[in-house]
Image 1 (cartoon, rainbow, N blue to C red):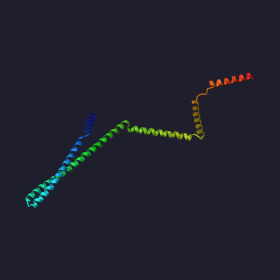
Image 2 (image 1 turned 180 degrees about the horizontal axis):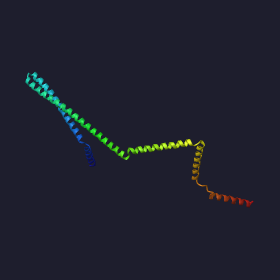
Image 3 (image 1 turned 180 degrees about the vertical axis):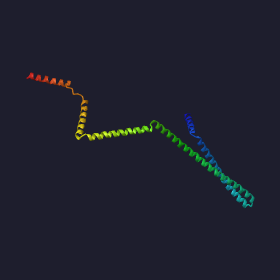
Image 4 (image 1 turned 30 degrees about the vertical axis):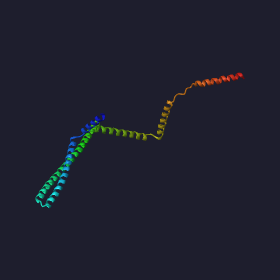
Amino acid sequence: MGGLFSSKGKDKKTESRVTEQDKAVLQLKQQRDKLKQYQKKINVQIEKDRTVAKQLLHDGRKDKAKLMLRKKKFQESLLEKTDGQLDNIDRMVTDLEFAQVESQVVQGLKVGNESLKKLHQLLSLEDVEKIMDETREGIEYQQEIDDLLSGGLSAQDEDDVLAELDAIVQAEVTDELPDVPDDELPEEKRKERARKEKRQAEALAS
C-alpha cells in the first residue's frame, strides 16, 4: 500500500511540472502522427487506383478508368494539403519549443539581475572605491615608513636594533622559566645527615 501511495504522489508531482506549452506541443505532435498515418493510407490507395485504372484500360473500359484516375487525382491533392499541414505543425512545434527555451533564459536573466541588485544594495560602488582607496593609502604609507627607516639608519643602528630585539626575546624567555629553589630537597637532607652520623661513629670507634 505504501509503495502505491508513494507512486501516486510521484505522478502528481510529475503532472504538476507539465505546462500548457508542453500540452500544446504534445497535441501538435499527436496530430502530426495522425496526418502521417493518413498520408500512408492515401499513398496505398493511390497505388491501388492506378493499378485498377490500368486494368480497366486493358479491358477496354475507358470511362471507368477515367473515373478511377479522377479519384486518384483528388486523393493526390489531399496528399499535398496534408504536406502543407505537416509543415505548419512542425513550424508550430519548433516555435513553441523555442519559446520555452527562451522563457527559461529570460527567467534566468531575471534571477541574475535581481541577485546583482541585492549585491549593489549591500555594497555600493562608492563603498568599493572607498575600500580600495583606503587599502592603497595604507600600502603607500607603509612603503613611506620603510623607505624612511631604511634611509635614516646607519649599519651600526641596524645592528643595535637587532641586538635590542635579541635582548628582549632573551628576557621574555628568562621570565618564563621557573625560579630554582635555594633549599635542598628533603631526600638530599636525609642522605647528608646519614653520612655525617656515619663519619661520627667511625671517629668514635677509632
